[in-house]
Image 1 (cartoon, rainbow, N blue to C red):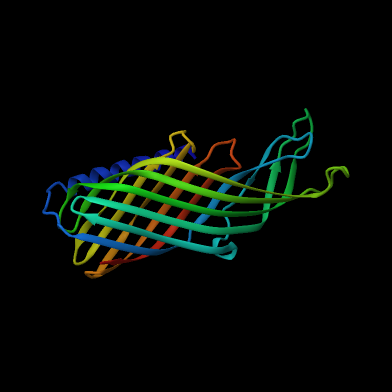
Image 2: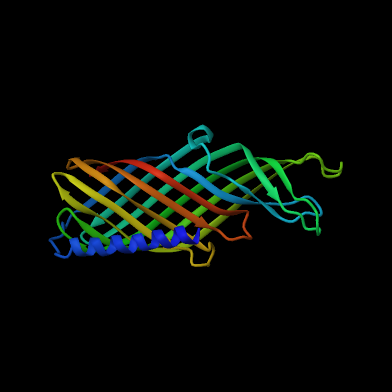
Length: 271
C-alpha cells in the first residue's frame, strides 16, 4: 500500500508540473457566476479490511473485503459533483454514497496461544459509506478553456459496517454465529489541486489530486483522477476518467482500510 501511495503521489506531482507548464500564460477571467452539476456513474473495484472481534483465546483478526464483484453486490449508489465559480474563486463539493454487501467473504483470526491454530471462517460483510468532500479552490493559472486550481477543504466519511461470522468446528461455547455492527465518523483536512487542459476541437483533459488525513482522524486519505472529456454545448459536456479513492483509517478502527478504483463516466451541466 505504501508503494501504491508513493507512486500516485509522484504521478500527481508530475501532473501538476505538466499543468503548470501548459497553463503558464494567464488569461482574462469571466466576471459572472457559473454553476456546474455533474452526476456520474462510477463502477469501482472495492477492496479493504475490517477488524474482527475474536472468540476467547484468539487474537484480533481481519476480513479482506475484496476485490469484489461490485455490480452484483451493490444495493444502492448516489454520486454527484457540484461547483460554483466566480472569477478565480470556486466552491466544490463531491458526494459519494454506496451501500455494498458481500455474503461470501472470509475472516482470518490468528491464534494467541503459542502453537495454537488460527481460524478462517465465513463472513457476511456489509458497508454503507457516505463520503462528502467540500473545498474552496483558487485559480493560480488559467486561460479561457484551461485552468489549474489549488484547493483546501475537508473530507467527511460516515461508515456503517456489518460483520456476520459463522464460527464452526469449535467447542460448544464458541460454536455460534456472531453479528456485529458499528458506525464511525471521520472528518479530515485535505489539500490538493484540480483543473483541465484544453486539447482543442472541444476536447480536454480533466484532472484532480488531493491528499489529507495526516493522522488527525484518519491516518491517510487520498483521491486522484484523470481522464478525457468533450464539450458538446456551452452548457453540456461529457467526461470519462479513472478514479482512485484511498482511506487508511488506522489499525484500531472497525474499518481499517478502504479503496475504490475504476472508470468513471460523468455528465456535466453548466448554467
